[in-house]
Image (cartoon, rainbow, N blue to C red; front, side, top):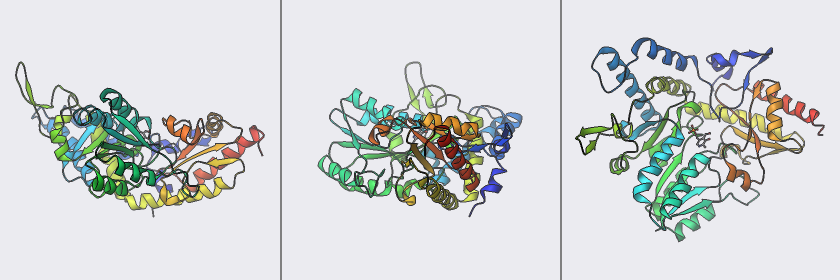
Length: 417
Ligand SMILES: Cc1ncc(COP(=O)(O)O)c(C=O)c1O
């Protein structure tokens, strides 16, 4: 088991006081805080080894090169990809998904084809596919939420199986989130992948933005074709994302961006492309942040992702019990804790989520109120917005107690029983 009280000490921002109140950070689904080791790695690179990569032979350039490629190996091991050729650095999850939309989909989605997404998608894994569908005159199908009162906020897998079997030849891609940033729902990716592979030749893209900081990830075991995620949600710096893709797919895909570093030979009128993974990394990369990302992976790996998951489960159980006892508060999360990560949306009769977030802020508790970049999901669950608390490895039960106090304060201010 991990000790969040000890972990908190590694995150300098978490010792900050504002107006004599400790900072309680419950918005890690938006972006996580960073441990000292990540912050130090950025300073170390700029102080000691700042040089461009893949170009020069002098010592500091070699150091920068080695450190940048060392992160790639750490990422490979963290998600159990079979080769570093399958690890592409991007700016974030959004860019990874767009990379697939602009390259693989450009070549492989045609008129009348079907791309399937789910009702739980963040806009980042919806709008690129809407655009592909519009451009290619393809169809976008949406796996709905279950209507069974026993399985709220889970996907309707019966609908999915039926649709998959009835449309197997037209379906070319399933682009689906691993975990929802609103309801915390963990989608059954292995089950989806085995159904898809049994009934069609469609590819599977996983939006891993909300799963990589909470669950052990094994892309080979999940049997997905693409898996995109962001460093900043998993204790690493902003400006770094990863797209994993199976090697044979990357080999067949055209480059996403053109320019320096992604080429092999260039003549006045044509060019050929670099080996994987550099074929997909055009121009000078975010070297410092990629290098520092390795420290975030090391931090999570040292904790052990099974332990991270257990800690998440403990906080979910604790928060659920407290929140369920509050009158006029509705939770928008699955019934079973094992079906979710540490992301809890709730709504309160008579108080807008923005007001809730404002009152939380007056207690120095950071949460998010809004549509969480998931407007169609808000429609599916019939609310304009939710308040959301979300956990990371540094959160304690005391953090949740302070959040509960803030809810009680909000109810008093709005005169709600
Ligand atoms: C499920 C999900 N997908 C995609 C994204 C986009 O991530 P980024 O902004 O790092 O590209 C987010 C961000 O909140 C998310 O929660």
